[in-house]
Structures are given as C-alpha cells and as structure tokens.
Figure 1 (cartoon, rainbow, N blue to C red):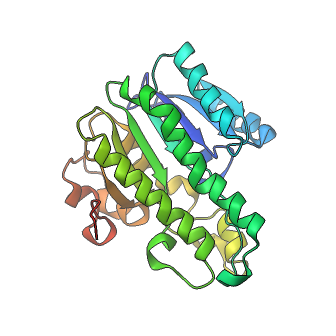
Figure 2: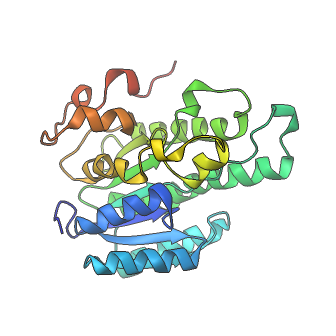
Figure 3: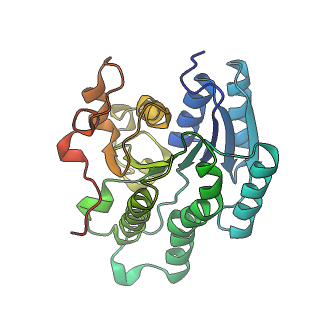
Length: 265
C-alpha cells in the first residue's frame, strides 16, 4: 500500500464500476479515505470489500445524484464529520441517446443533462467551501474527447461534456488565488460498459482497462501538483509520464496537443 495520498479525503462519484471504481481503488491504495458515491449499492459493497482487502478505509454513499438535495446533505455530513474535503472526483455520467439531434427524446435529454452537468455544478456548489478548507483541495472532472471532436449523432453526450469542461475550467480560474486546483481528465477509449454500449461491434479486449487512468488521477490529486485549468488526455499521458517523478510544468505533464488552458476563444 502506497502513501502518496495518505490522510486525504476523497469523494468519487460513479464509483461502483469502470473508471470510477479504478480511481477509488487507486486512491485507497495510496492511503486516501474514499467516499464512494453511486446508485448501485450492491456494486458499492463489492468495491468496498476489494478496498478493505487492501487495508484502505471507505465510506459508502448509495444515492442518486439527480436528487440534488442529497448532494447538499452529503456536503453537510462531510463538514460535520471531517470539516473539509481534499479531493473531489466528478465521474458519474450516462451516455444518453446516440441519434440525430432532432430525434433525441426530451426526457433522455433532461436526464442526461441532470447527471452529466447539473449534478457536477451542484457538487461544486456544495463542496467548494470544504475544498477551500483543505490545505490542498483538488477537484477533478472526467470528460470525453467527444466534447472536442463533436462526432455526428453524439450531440447529447458531447454537449454535456463540453458544458462540464466549461464549468470546470471557469471554476479553475475562480479558484486561482486559493488552495484549490481544478483539472479535467479525458480517459480516452477505455474498456467500460458505456463504451460497449456506444460501440457494440468493437473488440473491447483491444482497449485499455479503466486502471490505465489511475496514475494520472493519483498525481493530479497530490498536493505537490499545483497546475490548474488543464484539459488532460490520460491515454497520451501514460506515455508522457513514464517512470519520471512528478513534474510541475504542464508542457511535460500534458502533451501540447491534448491540453489547453482555459481561454475565451
């Protein structure tokens, strides 16, 4: 068990499977206390068992993030028990309809925006004061390359991730003079159930497992990494980092073709 996140408290949404579960196990393996948020209580319990086998502490929070008042309640409970939050990982998302814009069902549109966008805004709203009480608050949001490539039939999912990018990168600007650092991470093509639903004919065995994003997420959550407002491609990141120690210069940590600091363009 490592100690790079020893003593740090992390909230991870969409933690029951895929990228969220991989991040949770990675953080727990580095000594963090992980607060695991998901609607799937049985999957959370299975993940909790895996984390306990590694000796890591975890708190399970089965909840629907689109019940926005429960997010405020979670923030209140964290404040009352711990008084601060060190790491927030906004990972929970759904794919929604992959169809022409005019064919997207209104109820699916609303549900997808509620979870992918509004829930993350509500998380920031509830957790901001807790992150500011940390000596090194870190807010990390999981995005998608679709927010930039804008493929046909992906208007719903791509637009929610583009909105999340904008919210997170503006939040990074707003917290520049605080101890909070905010970054956005694109895992790239990854072997997840969402990817399988989007590309049913794809050979998933050729895709990296969700754990490939773990090292990037660990380093971004460390107090030593102080860059903020980055859009990071984790698949390129793995090759860029190698076994080098953590480097603070963003041009080393993030390939120039895969990152941009927030701008008005």
